[in-house]
Amino acid sequence: MTARRRLDAELVRRNLARSREQARELIEAGRVTVGGQTASKAATQVETSAAVVVAEARDGEDYVSRGGHKLAGALAAFAPDGLSFAGRRALDAGASTGGFTDVLLRNGAAHVVAVDVGYGQLAWSLRTDDRVTVLDRTNVRDLTPEMIGGRVELVVGDLSFISLRLVLPALAACAAPDADLALMVKPQFEVGRERLGSGGVVRDVALHAEAVRDVAEAAARAGLGVRGVAASPLPGPAGNVEYFLWLRADAPPLREEDLARAIEEGPAGDGRFDAGSATGSGAAVKSGTNGDEGSGD
Image (cartoon, rainbow, N blue to C red):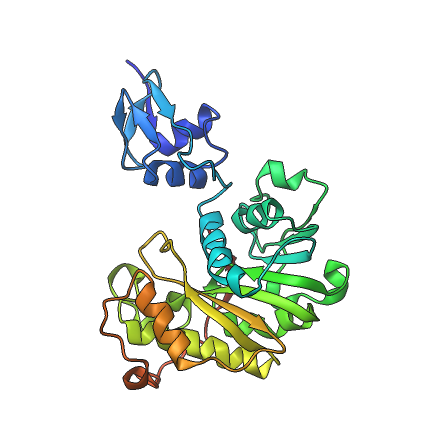
């Protein structure tokens, strides 16, 4: 009798994916076929003798994880206003498999300090790159400039299971006075568990606005203003819409019109969001209990 395995596990066994996480990303992207048929579920049972093929990325942007497309989208949104990664020493907070680190290096970053609370997740191609310093088993909340070899010129972050408001003081302390910070706001980790919808998804755009606003206020307390805000072009795995804040010490506070535009131009936009009417909505519950930092995708 022919043995059968989960498709994601079989991709790893055949060295077609580095990890089951990457295998799932390949499947979700529609790049995996089994017996000539496109696979749609990582849990699909396949025979170990089946013909399993992973197609090449169509756009040539085959980042080590889907998170790379998120930061690439943020750079595309902010670059016209002056954001650049070229020649800069950067901190990747919540590096995980390295999607953000990959984008930083491809766009000319001189060096990246990749920090994650986990261990051994960073893609081998990045872990062995001389331009990357790896700090595993490190909680971002505990970071100091001394731990990363001095203050950096650029900070990017994709963190899960913790509010950005709790890590901003450490990130700001690790940033040089003229540094840029491009941080991803995940409403599902900002608004409180009591207000999550089914599947852990935040569908109310007023809560999206509140999450971004709360993080911007925390940034202001850390001495940072908002140079730009943009929706991530790629939702999280569960369907959560996420947002990037571009922070700088010399930037002004968040402008409501910029926030409204980011929401309307993003995946959650429907032409009906009014930032003014959403101000302060549902603000009774905060997510201050989120304390276990984890890496994103």
